[in-house]
Every structure is written in C-alpha cells, then in structure tokens.
Length: 262
Length: 266
Image (cartoon, rainbow over all chains, first blue to last red; front, side):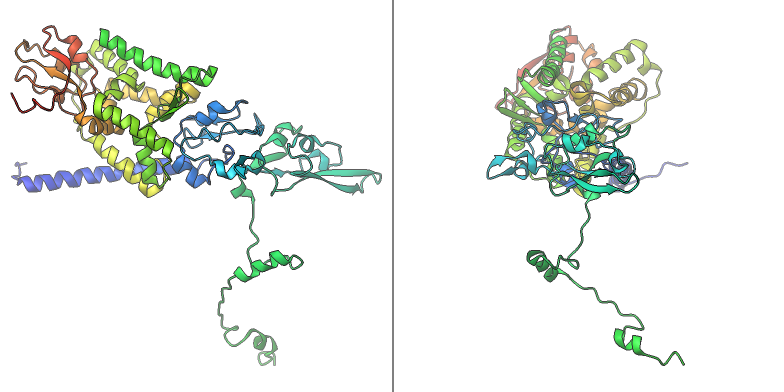
C-alpha cells in the first residue's frame, strides 16, 4: 500500500479521534466494572453512615473507623469480599456492633461519610439514634414461633423490650402453653446485630438487613384515621386520574347503565 | 545504593507506621495513604482521591481539604513526583519486576509494544469524568495502589492477584508499564510536581556518555539532555528516584535545589 500523504492537521485530528475512541472503550469497560462493584450484596455500614449512594461518594477508604472500633467489628472490604472495595462494613453474625456510648468510629471520619450529627441529639452523641439496618425475623425458622421457649434475641438486644418486644399468644396445639414471639419494632431498632449474633438457630433466624431494602412506605393515601397528626398527611396525597373508555363519562353512570344487558 | 536504601526505608517505615497504628494503637501515623492523621492532629489526604470525591459530588470537609492541601503543597513545592518512588508501595513491586526483567534480559528478546506515555493522562482525565458521571470515586474503587496499601494494613483478601497482575504486566508485557504509562496517580503527581524545587541536575562537562543513567531511568524522556547540555531535569515525570545518580560513575548527575533565577542563563 502506498503511503498516504497527510497534512499535519489531518494527522492531529485523526490521532485525537483515535485517542478519544480508545478512551471511550476504556470508559465503557471501566464504568461497567464500577457498576458491578458498587451494586454488591446487602451490606451493613458503620453507625451514622450516609445513604449508600452518598456514602460511596464521600468515603475516602482510609480505615480510621476500622482502627477506632474496639471490638474489631468493622472491616474494610478487600478484593474477594464482593463489596465496594475499601469501604467499611460489618457482618453482624460474626461480630455485631456493640453500640459504644462514645461511638469512637464516627468522629474520626475525616470526610463526613459517617455523619456525626445523625447520631447525636442536643450536641451529644447518642448511639441509640443509629440506623445501621433493621432486624427481620424468619417466623418459620425461629423456634419461639414453634412454641419452644427461647428469648435469646430479646435478651441480647441493647434496647431491651424496646427494639424487640415479645408478643404473647396461646399455643392451640398443646392447649396449655404460651407463645413468646419476638417482634421487631423497626423505628427503634438500630441494626446493631446483637440479636443476630445471639440467635441460637444454625443459621440466624433474625437477620439485620439494610433499612432501604426492608422498610416499606404506606404513602399519603393511607393515613391512620384515629390519629389527628397522621391524618394531616392526606393533604400531601396527589391523585393521578386516568381515563378509560368507561370512566370517560362517569364511574357511577357506567355502573347503572343497563343498556348492554338487554 | 544509599538512595535506594533510603527509598526502601521510607516506603517500609511509612507502611510500618500505619500497620502499628492499626494493630497496636501506636498512633504516629494512622489511616492509610488515602487519608491519614499524623501525630493525632495533622490531617493528610490523597489530593487525587479528594479531587475525585469533588467531581463525584461529595461535600469536601475541612479535614480532607486541609489534608489534601498539605500534601499538594509539599509535593508541588518540594518533592515533585517523589510520592511514586519514595512512598508508594507499588514501586517496590514494579522495581522488583524491573530488576527481574533486566536479569533475565527480557527487554532484549521482546518485540517492543508501542504504548504512549500519555495514556496515564487520559486515564487521569477519564477517572475524573467517570467520577462526575457516575457519582463515584472512579479510580479509588479499583485502584491497585489502594488495594495494596490498604491490604497491607487492614487485610489483603484476594488483593494479591491485582499486585501480581501489575508485577507480570511490568515483567512480561511492557517495561515500567504500570508506573510509567498507566497509573493516573503518577500522572497527577507529574502535574502537581512540575515546578517543585528538589531536582536532579546534569553536568555535561563531567559526563562520559556511558548512558547508564538512561538504561536505569524509569522515565527515560526526562534525561534527554544527558551528554548534550548541562541543565536541570525539569519534566514533571521525573520521580526523583535517584537511580541515575547512583549509577553514574562520573558524578555528572546530582540532586540540587532548582533555581528559578538562573534558569535563563546557560
């Protein structure tokens, strides 16, 4: 092939285009790796952590929270942990958060990824405000739901009788025993995981999951009619009106319309 | 040898200080190379990581802003791209690969694969663009440098595979492949340290043109003046590793403080 004569300008433009193209390929590969790495399994963050999306932006992965944790609860995700690399997390079944009153892991955070204000009230640290996750009970594996007496999680809970309460019930099978079923109060539960750690079943029947995953939202259409304050929410409710062939006149009209019957 | 030894000592001591701080609570230098606290008061942060956070849309706190500023000022004013050869633990890995490459004579038998030195600047740009678009710290989440220093302090996991990839890349694929061509952190410090004061100076009068310095230099382009004219190495890509100084038998290369006043007199 004959060598093509090219002007410098054309050469420059071509090599620029080539570089941009290569960078584009790189960007696609890189972004898919990133996408994969951050959409990892359900994981529990230290107390005071920002919402996951913001947390990933802000965490500089220095490990100061990990060093500060006196119980070796927190770990930094290493390659192979299948979690966003370098970010702190804990496995409650292995070592739960023991809810230190001075929360040593939070004030050391240099970037605010662990937000001190979210775990303090009136300027004082309060670990009970932490929202690391929420406990979920599997009523089929939990032996207390079978009627066997166990209150390990109830006793292990640092917010005793607040975050987990016992629901009493009559055991119809024996006719003379009681059920003492553990029920989680999501508003109070901090997600420390001491219940999961204490659970006596082979695989824990009470598990901590991220709050965003578990918690539902009723929406403003459903209010507690017996609660004045809650009823106010209905004012925020927005209706979305759709029109179908039948409802185009009016809904009532279509119900009373007998013309199609005879 | 004295520079090589002091570089290794610096690299190992810094990592050692982090490790004893984490394991035994001796808090002289706590954290890791991404962000740390020296003597329980002075914040130090990786300015490139902070820049990515800024592009990702994170609020930059005073702590990391000051930390990044201290580091930027130090390398920008004094050290140049010194981080790469005096602090970064990956340097030990790539130097080992390089040593083995030289011992085995791989460069002699290998067909040269063309790679541009500019790749790293594209990677640097890409990491900022992706940080902005995805709202994530794009390089920090996959950085082999962080995997290594974090791993040494907090536990490695499968991180060794990443380190091995770099080792074999440098050994088998391209001489100085990672540090000299791909790493965006090196590119970042090349830019930051462009006008720094500690520099290698060449004295063409003493030079016998043995070209040993170019043989060992991981950034050969910065030594373009060797044997030609007496001047200071001004390119930001020089890591101040002092390999050229150690290998020079004629005392034609030495560290000096760059003088901006005499620059035009030659």
